[in-house]
Amino acid sequence: MAYGVKIAKGKAYKGAALKRRHIRVRKRISGTEARPRLVVTRSNRGIVAQVIDDLAGHTLASASTLDPSIRGGEGDKSSKAKQVGQLVAERAKAAGIETVVFDRGGNQYAGRIAALADAAREAGLEF
Image (cartoon, rainbow, N blue to C red):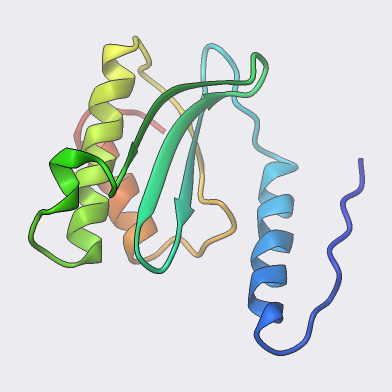
């Protein structure tokens, strides 16, 4: 199935480029019951990580910077992303998930995205 994203100008170009990259990544990545997809959504203020079974259409585990345990904490955005990675890995392990497919959501694998992924790996989640 083809997805079209209009080429935008100015400030809208960044969002359209992100959408194009995410579509390109999602062509190759799909979550199953045995190996669900760990998708990362990044905004300027926060970060959200969800473990999704695409075949059933269910979210199996999730964590974000809006979680009460992370929300008021000290540190920069990268340290909060590490906390989100640890939390989503713990919740996934509690749900019986050992391995996942990592979906960076069209974002570059650097900074907060890499910090979240590394923290999830250290907490025992395999990619």
